[in-house]
Amino acid sequence: MVDIKNLSFSYGTNAVLENISLHLEEGRIYGLLGENGVGKTTLLTLLCGLKNAGQGSVCIDGYDPYKRQPSLLQSVYYLPDEVMPYNQTGTRFARYAGSFWPGFDYDKFVNIMKEFETDPEKKMNKMSAGQLKKTYIAFALACNTKYLFMDEPTNGLDIPSKAQFRKAVGLYTSEDSTIVISTHQVRDLENIIDPIIILDRCDVLMNATIEEITEKLYFDYGTTLRQEALYSEQLPGGFIQVLMNTEGLESKVNIEALFNAVHRHKDLIKRMFNK
Image (tube, rainbow, N blue to C red; front, side, top):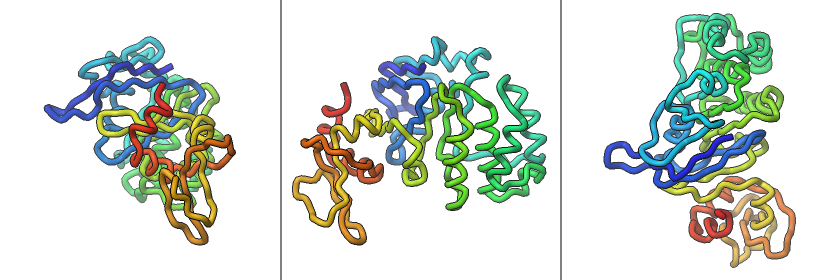
């Protein structure tokens, strides 16, 4: 269980996170969304203990991650956006680095690499950017950690690889794990992330499940432009529109439209979703 209370963090005089509070539950795959510079990567590095909170607290299963206690670190893995192309094969890297995580499963790593159609015997510094990223994703999933934090994992992946990534996350993560995925590529992850966290500059605009979102907002895919829409965008053959769900109708969330609606009506959305 992750509890973030009144968290603030600054780079010098530049405040990135300010009085942020979040509760993250087990068995969820959180999508962490926000514009550039709002602190998504900073939040992930605070969660894994690479940075220390300026004010407030980050608590994971009763531990302060910045204290870097092995009993917590063995249950946490952080995959950054930029990964290192070591001069060694994927298998050698996995066997060596995997020794730091008690739950690491080498056979699982190899199986995921097969799913990714990537040769684990190839040297990492000879891999393409997409192959290298898939090697690290396979390793992250094979560590079998309770907490997995991933920063822009689909960057550098082609369209088939993005589908492979979604499949791997569904197949190779446990039901009681907590996963946080920071992304700008919301369409890559639209069918796997739930709940959705939307960060603004020094603020949390939303932390809600898909069910909570569809209870309060309605996503219309019709051909008639609705003047009362919180957000509308013309698509081939019609519109995608976000409206208040005053009639309790069911709809499918479009995360890009949701994100734009939230940013156009920040105060309204915060009142609706932040308890």
